Length: 235
Image (cartoon, rainbow, N blue to C red; front, side, top):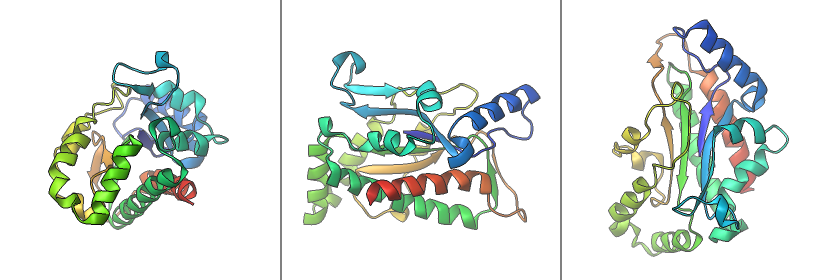
């Protein structure tokens, strides 16, 4: 799931027409009250109708779905559908575990951003997790038995192989996320849990440090909004 962050989505050097278009999007979507919108999402076995699945067995939700189908009244249910998926073996208890892990990492990301003086426009958080319930349970069992470390490299390779989700995003909003996933040096600083999920900040086409100007409250608005939702889903 790609969650586009902030209420202001344009950089200082953007043409006025682009500023106006992005401001309109922000005011008419969940950006306005939650600080983010779903820019794209896909779920493993996300439908019982084979016609709604792609060749790999995923249901893909494009940018129009995030703009038009997701609103303030149903945002918890729509984001919940990203995780809670009985057809893929993700029941309530397992889904709450995943939501809780996402919430914990969002808290860490929030803490880092609150200590930095930077500005990012049209950046996103990319959420990835093992969507096959059986594989997810086995990975958790491995972690509890202490054998997960031996299989870390293998699982990381499987996680990275799923990055190319087919999520459609606007060309002028999106930058490749693969380069972010290729740099895994700081993974263990975010979480000690086995590599069955990941939360990454991506799309830095419009990012800079601004010493003396304080943290980026625009991006933090979205991070806090997402954290509240995942904490509620985990409860």
